Length: 161
Image (cartoon, helix red, strand yellow):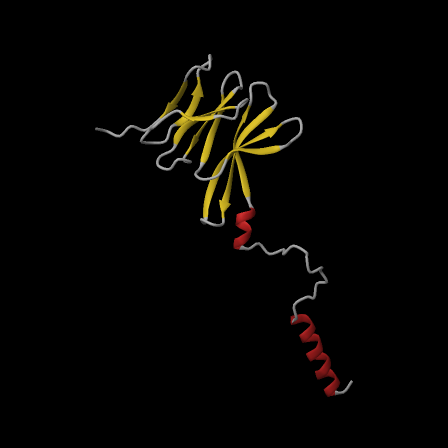
């Protein structure tokens, strides 16, 4: 092999090894590289609460809002028999800490939908009506229904006076 042929072969081999691999992929194939925009397509589920009859699960879905560049929490329901999911409390503000009443007819949760500090809300599941229960200066935490379903207990930080 001549010196020129060896040099040409070496250049061709180097160019082949250093060139990025050509992947034959369809134009509409998903991009395998994770980007910052992909963060807005992710959701996380937490705080699952099974209804007393076992037919529905309420949970908190946390996702990122691309318009405000902030994470948002919303309360969703899953029908156990069909796996159908639907939002119960979503939209403006954050919604979290769902808790079923002992009879399963109501769902208490905390929300910032009205602006200001988080407040306690109760949703009647049969009618879909929602009522704000509190007007607190700080967020209620660790919600718990009384056994008869007539009261809701919660914890809240109270500043020293």
